[in-house]
Image 1 (tube, rainbow, N blue to C red):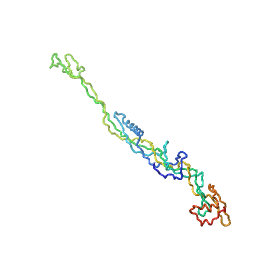
Image 2: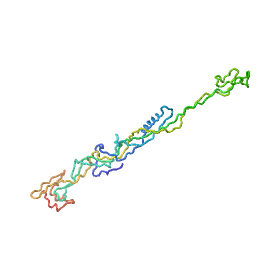
Image 3: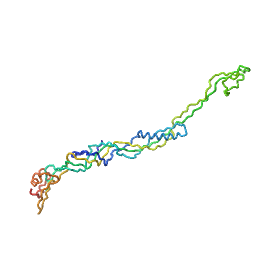
Image 4: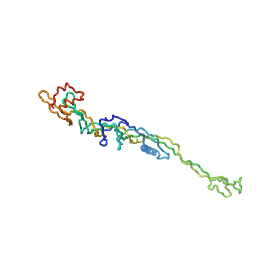
Length: 321
């Protein structure tokens, strides 16, 4: 997965307390429309078939159509899928808006410069972050219109052609009176005679070939020939993509381990000038130790303090004890 932000600091180890609350997710990866799927192609083919069928009305030609895919136009999305299949990149989780619930002061109070107060390091041992940001992948739906047209073609109908037949083949002879070269009075007979092929008196028929009935060729079709291209109505197709995304206001999380909150006043003593006397040491910000004393202020509280200013410190007033 592509990393968009740095990993969580080792100082703040967090764990999710509930399912992710995706409040302001944004897709950070471009969506590319995919090719028409089988369902979309089938819808296109259905339209083309209907257009081809309209041309067949009133004739016997064979009409067909072929889909010609066109432009793909964005309609909507990406929108989070109903079952989005979230996958959070745990290394990218960053917590924000920390709310401590249990704190402690680590170590003894320390002086800082000429301040009449003493300070300590405040540590949170429990609390929660109001929200988190992180990278994740999820399934998103996007809708596109797939335009197309139909190449309409036909195979022209070729009607049956008559193949004429003929009556029985042969000839008549007459061996009777006045044969006239063997034909006698039979030379007037022809296939037009309804009794052609039969013996008629002394006219004897000699067959030389069978009769052939009329016949027809089989109906056929000419070659497939392009006729026209006609537009179809674009088909809507929704595609699902698993996309890189970013959540900028996700679920709250609980603190595990400890978190350094910073330096705070743990012992406070109002100083006095002129006629006013110094006040009493008071514990602050959850400090419960016994080092809020002038003895500690003048002794241990000065140990290890880098920016202690002795010149300034010499002029301050603190309680007697």
